Image (cartoon, rainbow, N blue to C red; front, top):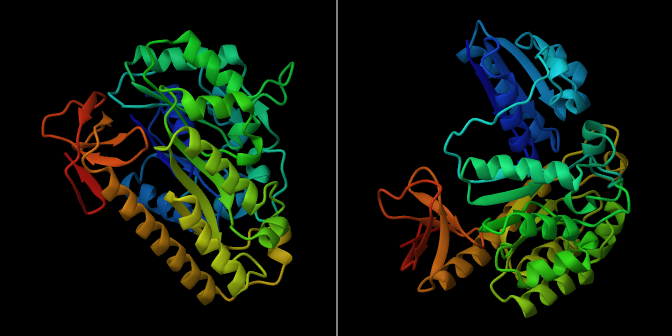
Length: 392
């Protein structure tokens, strides 16, 4: 009797999947699909994962949770492979799974970094997004709760903590005194002086507070890597998305960070073919990749999501959306290739992972010498780039 958890989508889902796997233990012959609904493609992949899991484990109980279990509840519940659904907001509650409520001890599985959820849900109303439907309003974990979770990971000897959330930089707004994310990061670094690496998942540049900026710009243990929830490079499209930043705001943040910390690596989420996007807007989306130096790009072809305002806007032809997404990915690949080439000859600290590779502070991928122990921090000087990976 084993529990198997399949995770789709964001890093927050990865963190929650690990927590579910530990919580559910060996309680029954169970398969859980922790789904994603951010795009129609994510929903398609969720359905594929369900069918694949059923074929592999025909006698297991198969439960679906995650955002698609909320947004596409009727459709997923009607699939013959699915035995039941667990609400996304309840998936970490033992009562939803009929598991006794008791302290849970994380297994030491030799994982290399710890994903710590500090926030869930979102209070914003971006016109393309269904995540508030799947995750609900923003809720923050207290500093004490976060420190306790970090301590569990450090007891398992991880060398990097990654803070995750649906709207990570909104952390604290619902807590007494409305602290900002920078205060949480300062508390983690102060409480655990031996923690070598603290990394952030996706952040909203409009919510970066002064303390957080200072850490990103000058704290050695805060990784020089920001992944911006940018979404687009054209101001009118950003306005129609109901984003809270302009193109100039995003570029200013990147410039200020790079002035203080030149090695900082920038990632971004970008949507191709948002409704009403014309050639001028698409050109602005392309150009911001190079101007901001986006080396970690997540490109999403726009797909209308049920119940969102963007689904009612004039749509771009799907073939054009697909072509524009390919152009964005090609531009990111070009900027990334130049960036990786510039890393050769520079000493890097790399967190070793399974499979003989790892990631540097900037999240540059590095292939390591044979026999390197996963989880170790190793100093290497890459000599070349092979198939998009730095080689020592």
